[in-house]
Image: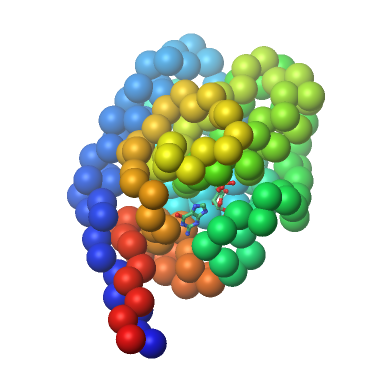
Length: 175
Ligand SMILES: O=P(O)(O)OC[C@H]1O[C@H](OP(=O)(O)OP(=O)(O)O)[C@H](O)[C@@H]1O
Ligand SMILES: Nc1nc2[nH]cnc2c(=O)[nH]1
């Protein structure tokens, strides 16, 4: 079975939108330092590009969580594989995620991080798939709302493949 990738959002569209988000976020945090938290593994490409477009000072840390394994459906159980290195107490925390789908991952993560008493806790996601939400999550900045399709690229994988695509695509399996 061969897999083909259909482009859903082009590299140029993604780049332009990340620039816009960087401007908006920089304005919102004027005079402050942002502590970016990247949700590994998928969030890493978006985090790097977004961080480069933010003009206020930033620090960053990384957390690794997962509930999908190699499949296309959330198991519903979020596993914390790597915690943050530093305390977030009194910091202006911005979580940077590649996608919010069922909401299970972010619901869990926001709950864990809120208990650590950051000065503020906000969320920026490159993609949002609102049709599949089972847990209510407040999103502060969204790159693109997308339909209910399993997407790859820009950090997003299908059985660990395709994370390195510079655009967002949908996997089509041809017999
Ligand atoms: O809203 P949800 O349904 O919880 O889905 C969103 C999560 O799914 C993906 O992570 P995944 O568990 O595939 O781990 P990965 O980033 O390491 O690929 C993605 O990076 C999000 O963290
Ligand atoms: N690769 C990938 N991971 C996801 N995790 C939650 N939704 C998705 C999706 O559409 N694609």
